[in-house]
Length: 335
Ligand SMILES: CC(C)(COP(=O)(O)OP(=O)(O)OC[C@H]1O[C@@H](n2cnc3c(N)ncnc32)[C@H](O)[C@@H]1OP(=O)(O)O)[C@@H](O)C(=O)NCCC(=O)NCCS
Image 1 (spheres, rainbow, N blue to C red):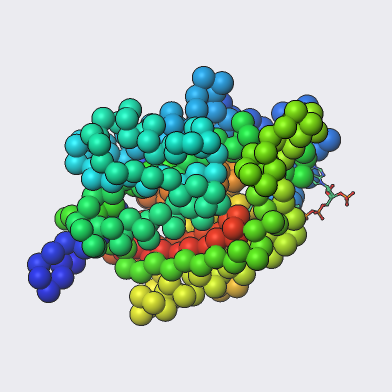
Image 2 (cartoon, helix red, strand yellow):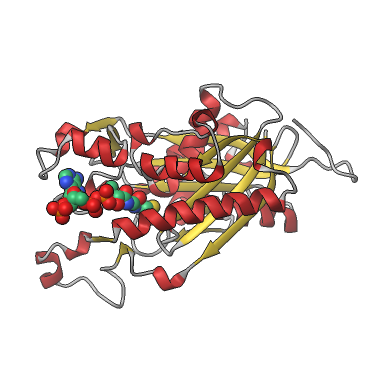
């Protein structure tokens, strides 16, 4: 649906959407070979049945690049049509420089500015959409927004409390002004830095540099997570951000055709749906197939919801995400 403004300008929104899902599918039964767990436990507590694992030869930039190319093709763009790149990840190509620089060089977009939202947690992609919208609004830039995670390489495969939850993936969107844009009607975001020690990858920075001793203890791959507190906060923040963005846009939750939340855990998604008073068919869920893919989860879910024909022209679609930081964000789209 294309609604031009009083000056005859097309709206700012999504102009292309693409994903990359690594080929290898890993089942819950395979996890039982690494840790003391079971398909029954994982399905009952998380809803996850399978996840994708990147190949040994693949790195974060490979995943990001494949999703970026898919998004460009989806919008019928050439690399030269992109003015700026923002990439959200917690699992970068290297510590510095950022992954966006590697993607920029390989995509062949010229010396355009690019940067990471590093450590932005699973809310990264939705936060990046908000930033992209304001860049497009301020200076007319056409932005490439990428959410990518290759977390299975940086997590501890012996920690059953965390390893079974995650998977690898990338998603990307072209954001700018143009005919046929999926309009970004409103966006909201927030951070509670007092909870920064509850979820994260703590080793490797200046507070806890990598040392032989820490590597011996497996701390270089230690994902710190208070699962129950994360669960509570994820439900609270994703629900509250959804209500806020709907109110900012001047519509009501009844007007929203589909909510596409960050795919952390089926029980979290069910609790968000209950809080928002949404029936099952109004909440898109694919966590059973891919697990938690961090900042890739929302673009992958949005792409899949569109791909299977769940979204009609004119539909209001709400994205909501929560992650380490704690960060949260929500965006309301009109297709
Ligand atoms: C992690 C999570 C699934 C755990 O579910 P839970 O119902 O809270 O489970 P509990 O923490 O009560 O753990 C119950 C037991 O299961 C055990 N357990 C943990 N992981 C297990 C696994 N993979 N297989 C089998 N048992 C496991 C625990 O050791 C614990 O055993 P104990 O009671 O003997 O100590 C849940 O808390 C969650 O999803 N939290 C949010 C995580 C998240 O989304 N993180 C990313 C956010 S962006």
